Image 1 (cartoon, rainbow, N blue to C red):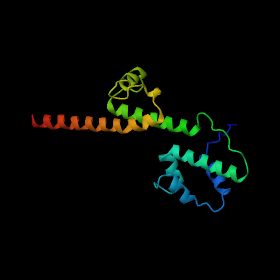
Image 2: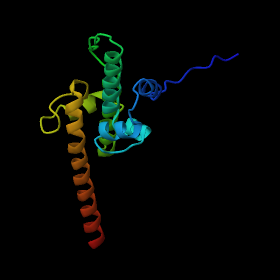
Image 3: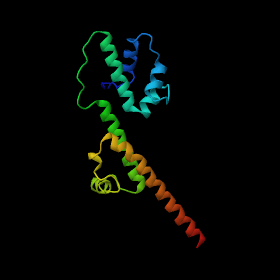
Image 4: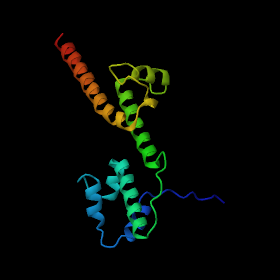
Length: 159
């Protein structure tokens, strides 16, 4: 007999906490915490996992205060931070692949990233904030790559 593995439901804690907060509107809360992006809990979780985690932490703090509990000390590394870090690194690696870098070769990845005009440090050394700022930079590099390729195609057609 196979043992069933329970999947983590990121929305369960939200709904439990929401149930303990009378008068709070789910859509309004998601709308505010998502930065006026959406009222959909799933879309919010998918597009802004860090902010979703922050909302859950704030809800937990409010419920604890309502129940007379003292605030707990923050853990050093929040699981939401780890989730976002993983998503951002994955996004960077995807863009590096598009740029033509073999992402299975960490020496190549790190030597590219370590260039002063790129990031100045390896992927593993970058913080969440640095990764957030790096993705648009990598996007502009990809746009420039496409522009150059298109120009080469145009010139090849002329000749």
